[in-house]
Image (cartoon, rainbow, N blue to C red; front, top):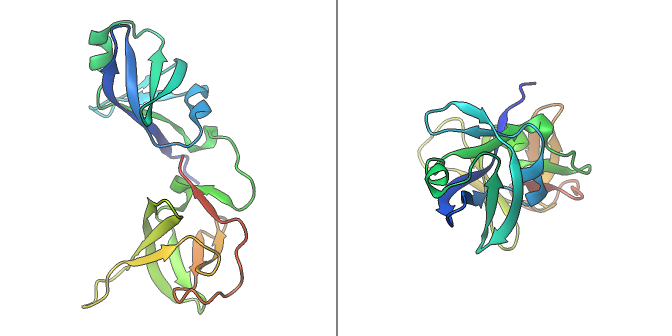
Length: 184
């Protein structure tokens, strides 16, 4: 299996005069900003090694200090860049919990084995996440399928088989304990 780049956050602005940057986070655990082997994916698509010295929360995001970024000019040059790591660098999750990058693109089947489409998006809401299933063909009247990530809809996630089994009616099938679609 390929080891994808996973975005932990995006630099949205310079913060202060000492080279700190404000980051819109794509992760729930800010300690992941301190993982070894992080890279900065620049706007031109190139990668540069990155070392985060420290982080702090600030108004719904994070402020990070990078090694070798000591001025507002250096920080401003990083706006639009992404902080990334390889998926294999992320901490292992408990059984039944998954990072979004592991699920996106997987085929989705109903309980009878009929392919419904591919998981194209995971929407995060206050109540629970919602899986957006994009049908393979666009027949008239057939649009995307929205499934709440609760046991009565999500029957099984099998990463080794590379598929998700759902019950679009929400009537239950086999309960799926602890299905959690964590973002990276």
